[in-house]
Structures are given as C-alpha cells and as structure tokens.
Length: 314
Image 1 (cartoon, rainbow, N blue to C red):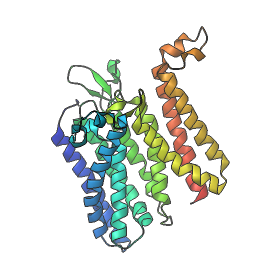
Image 2: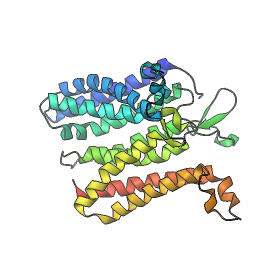
Image 3: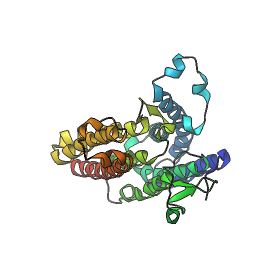
C-alpha cells in the first residue's frame, strides 16, 4: 500500500466513519428509549462544528500571525494540513451534546452512549489519512524487513515511512474497552474515561509524526495538537484528583507532564548544555530516545488518568 493524494478517498472514509458512528449511536439511543433524532442532530450539527473548530485549531498554530499580515485565505482553505484533528473531534463531541439537549435529555448520558460509536468514527477518520499524502506518517523506515503494511506505508518511490495513522486507528479500537463497559451509571464517566485513553496515547503518537506541525503548530517546535491533548487531559484529571484526594494519580500525571516538557526540549537539542562530555550518544540519538520516552509517557498518562477517573467516580 502506498500513500496517495486522494481527496475522494479521504472524504469517503470520513463520511463512512461519521455514518457508522451515528448509526450505532442511534441504535444505542433506541435501545435506551431515547429519541433517535438526537443522532440526526448530532450528525448535522457535529459536522458543521467539527469543520469550524478544526479550522479554528489550525488558525491557532501561529496565533493569528498570518491573518494580521493579510493572508485571509487561511480561513477559507480546507486543505487537510490546515485543519486540526483535535478541533474536529471537539466539534463532533459538541454536536452530540447539542443533539441531546435539543432532544430533551442530559448531554452526559448522550456522550456515554456515543463513546463507543465515537471510537469507530475516529478509527475510520484516521485511516482516511492514507489519502492525504504525508499526513499521519512518521520517519522513513530504512530496514527492508520492516517495510510492510500496516507497520509502514510506501511513498511510491521505493521508500516507506512509519504508518502512525494506522497505530492511531488501532488505538481508537482499543479504546472500545473502556467505552463498552456494560455496568455503568450514565453520568459521563464512560465518555471521560474513553477520552483519557485517547488523549494520553495521542501525546505519544504526535511525537512519531514526521511533520507534526502539519496539523497545527505553535511556537518554533511544539505541536499544538500535542499541547491541546495535554491541556484537555490535565483539565479532566487534576480537578478530579484534588476533589477526590487521590494524590498518587495526581502526582503521576503532573510528573509525566513535566517529563514531556523536558523531552520536548531534549529532542530539539535545546538543553544540550546539561550533558557532560561522554554523553554525545544521548545527543546524537535524541530523536529516537525522546520518541520512545513519549510513548512511555503516553502509556503512563493513560494509566494515571484512567485510575483517577475510576477511583474518583466523579
């Protein structure tokens, strides 16, 4: 399989993901004796809000610098590299909440029911990146025995790059585990726990991307998508831990957040003054070491966040 620039494929995959997610959501609404029209409203409103927030997320990549210089086409261009994936996901979530409110039931209940269908939608949305050229791929894979799909994807010139988007899609399906817990009070915890799994892992996946800035970029070297994931995850976990007096997961998530900042600077050789003579290997292999560290940090964030949600039950 090779990367292509196929807008038709990408749009069809996104549409298929939205349709699959909303049909399953509608079936879950019907099973719980809730109005199915909430799914129709969510599909329509969510699509519009997703597009708006995806564009807004991208415009934050330079804090509006291009707009100040008169590049107003930044607002209207709908190129994949000028849309924020996190912003789009937030738009769909807002659409589900809006559909519930307009249909006369609690948004928290709707989000819990949408958690699993949302994972299916995210999976297909990630696979849509196969038709978006370099979006969703990592560094070039040099070893021939590793150049196979789904681990790597060809570039059409004999080379292959790490298929990060496939890992992201697979993880979305793994997140069906917390999303499909059957014995659960409909208080929003199913959705929150699923979101923690997604956000924590995405912090690690973002570092594997060859062009992380292509889906929004803030400052000279920090991916805005990664920042948004961290802010959302901390916004979920920290208040819960403080209210519930759960100090272990709180300490863990704060330490991991600090470690993520350290490795970001380390990867970009901005703290090389901390390394004494004899540690040249650590600087020469900064990219590899930092990427491995971020995957561990992502796993740690998932563990700490999941524990916070389960133990607080808030």
